[in-house]
Length: 262
Image (cartoon, rainbow, N blue to C red):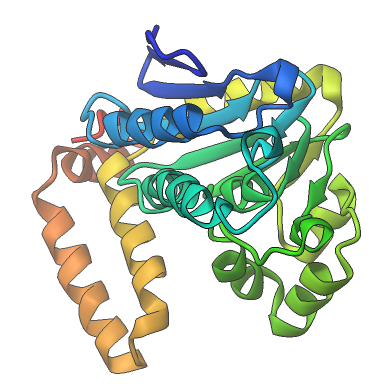
């Protein structure tokens, strides 16, 4: 368990779980919570014993972005928004580029900065009682939290503009259909399914997962020859891992490999 005020961190059986814990404020971000979220994600992604990262919310919300009660509604908020966004973006970057699988468990509304944070996961599990909202037009601001990065890559530029400009709530089933989310589950099955997914990924070949994520993330900046070269370097380097030896042996022994993430 952690000693943070606004997030709870647990490590168990290879799973590092972060729960955003301001339920009375719909898990909205103030300066302290954004910093704690950045620091908690940084700690987990640097922990070699963590083989799957989970991020979810306490109560009825995943995360609803900035806590507007901490803002003044005038030009002085520029520095406040910059500080808040910078801290949130550290957390988004940590989740999106984590060297292990990252699962965002969208237990409730994900809006504003929480929208981008939800999309940063490799697997996005959504409760049937959740919804996604871009939300920024309601207060005449532009997107942050990686939303303008993830949206066009997940749903295409035309649909991204529709979501951002019309700003209509997106229900769970639609989120899965258009590629924002991976799977929707009934609310009363959500916690069990989230734990099941995390355990499955934590039992996998962690270093191979991380290498595959790096290849996917880097593919947008490379042409095909460069991507093929990166794949060659990556797959050959993984031959040195203990998990590769376990997987190879298990294949010929017709057994399930017992990976250890090394």
